[in-house]
Length: 218
Image (cartoon, rainbow, N blue to C red; front, top):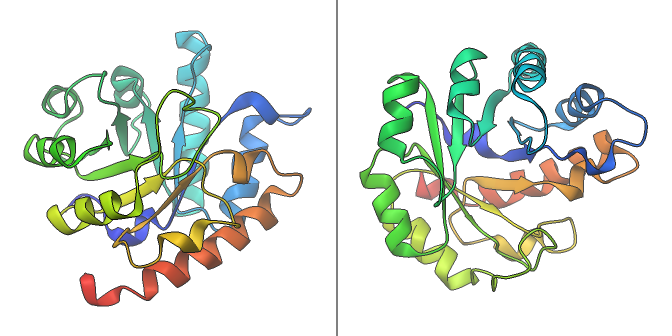
């Protein structure tokens, strides 16, 4: 398997909304120091040249801290930057096509909201699933949350790791215990915080508690 469950414990997804005078590089480093195990670089507005430059810089930073580095959606950028892989949504490139471009040694993550989407993604070669949103979130205003039972059903049905995403913070993350997840993916609960390293450290501790309690599933 190209990814291990422990790589997904605390999955940080970047967002430029809260830079507050810092660079994204600086914020990602704080998150890594706090215990983030994987970073997904998500950029919607950067031009290709700057995106590629940033991807190479943050990819090198992740390697320095022993964390995996993925690109959101942009498979060609992931290839050029030699990222560890890519994460694609339901409306993006298929896992098979992403695999053709990136090669067999790279990680392909896929978003899933339903059991059928999860099973299809696994069949098409996904290495892990991002399932959500599991709680209400400002980034997904038009969708209802995936319930705990739906999340658990997906975890039980697939053989690849599942990470929960969407609206997760220190106040609700323990509600996901017992679902079978390999970890949690977080945006604002890390990158919108005044002390990113401390926020990541607290979330990492809680994620460890959830995952370590489910060792029998691995």
